[in-house]
Length: 86
Image 1 (cartoon, rainbow, N blue to C red):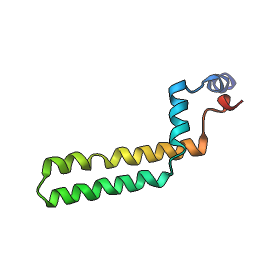
Image 2: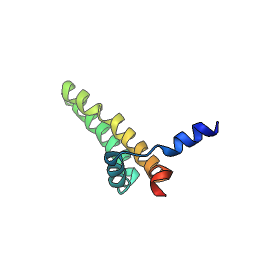
Image 3: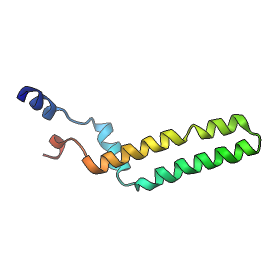
Image 4: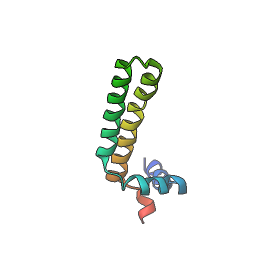
């Protein structure tokens, strides 16, 4: 069990992931929630306006916005790998 823990400690974030985390941690988490709600609202408005294709396209943005919000929250709570901070 110790060897598994030692192996996990040796893992580090890549340069690109570290830069993305640094930038996304600056964005408030509720921005992604509001972006998702905005996409759903725009999709509904387009559906009412009988723009079905565009409505489906915009409506599909809600889930990725929510996932970006989860990623943002994780970055803020956990930060980079512990070994990167040492």
